[in-house]
Image (tube, rainbow, N blue to C red; front, side, top):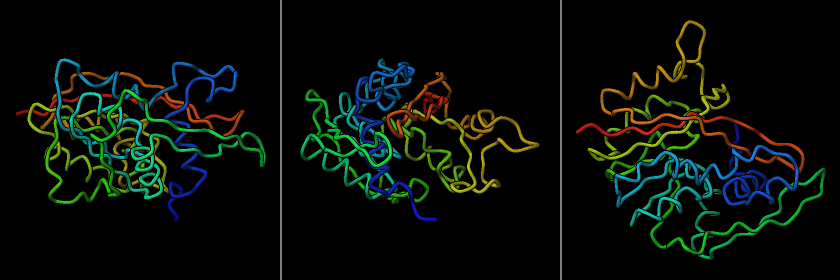
Amino acid sequence: MANPYESERLVAEYLLFHYAGEEEVSGGRPVPREALNFSVRVVTELADPARPFDTALDLGCAVGRSSFELARSARSVLGIDFSSAFIRAAETLKREGELACHVPVEGERTELFAAKVPADIDASRVRFETGDATALRADIGSFDIVLAANLLCRLPEPAKFLRRLPDLVAPGGQLLLGTPFSWLPEYTAPEHWIGGRVGTGPSWEALRKILEPDFELQLSKDLPFLIREHGRKFQYGISLGSRWIRRS
């Protein structure tokens, strides 16, 4: 299957998802406001402000908004995504501060949208690279905070990714996860799902069982998100957000 996240349409969709304000997403229509700005909220609502962090890793960073948000606190942020098109967009935003695209309105009609990095963020603290979250380079090191937002159920082998996490999060560091557990066979073969199958328990319980030997659960909460497909069609989801502390 061709990677849909390399398409120009998906790049534009995610630029809008990551960087748009309320009016730009809604067009004045009655959308659920609590689901906006997910790429910011997954940082601000999950990270523990009492635990300062210097280094951060954003896995599945897409077009980079969460990576830039992490840079408000971290001196060094690495954003990694499997999509080279997403990473090119993120690098342009780092370099230029903004990136224009055309987002669908209806049929063939589009409108111009300009994604912009907030002026009060030091984009020089962030770097991006293309990579596979289940096969990260051996010399990547460990980080004070690791974020993986809506990534788990888009991986071919999520358990393999989860087993690597103890090496990526420094002792005492934070792991921030968000996932709607949207298991789809086109991304993850059913035998690799974390729970969610007939005869298994809930995915959340299976996830906890994998992580708890190395991490302590500190917070879990629902994080709604909204992705606009065109002017009158939206994807609404509820990611289960959690904060874990790496055991010493």
